[in-house]
Length: 340
Image (cartoon, rainbow, N blue to C red; front, side):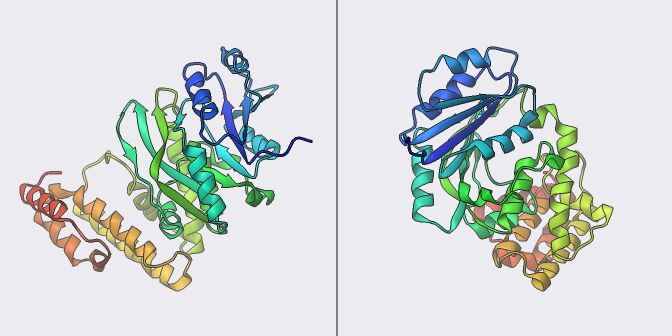
């Protein structure tokens, strides 16, 4: 009887012919070889199947959806079909560096208390050269997830044993932000870690979710963090939800005014007080995250001149956010000039 593989690499694909060969070869050329490559064709209409079948590697396991199920249902199907000790994700337009699986498997083997191992990612295609440096420790990741996703979905490897819990599945209510909700859910019960090295080349193109479904993704963002605000004992008002969402607009589609800065600070302090009462997030990681958001708000509001500089330094949050000499100098000069 053939033994089960150490890793199942799960890659859904729908009409992915343009970059598919690069993605497949990046997995087949991994330095870690004990894996099955579970590719689920989601009823593609282009040359996807032809390209996959051109590879004769016995580790490829091709499964076809009879009709287009879309990403969430296909991912959940893949979880059910996976046989590996670990489940690694991959997308059909990205590239895994050759050592990715080797690094992540070694880390998970050595750290049985960690359930999810992510990594840094750099951009290819548009915005080439940009690097996503995600936080490392579970405490940092969990705190950041209240505001934004900080796990590179196609660059993650998960301990499959945690997925024996049927509640840990991608939720169809969270279309286009399903990964953020998934990691947020997992973070409340299991530990996550991001290796501090680039193991994935991520491609942003015209077919990326953030481009095709921007409005739906933006609407569903709020659905991710609201349940976790409620865990903190907060029933957020609509204005507070809007403030929370705006921390992650980049660039801001508006010019910040004093009222906005004050509302941001009030909200951050409310979050800090709520967490002190409920102890959902570890300290000092949580307040460090609040302090980082406060710095970003103020540093992107330098059009308000010295006023925003004084507001920044008046906050008790600055005790958790040290500025480098370069950051301090830039902040001072641009505040003096009233420029962002």
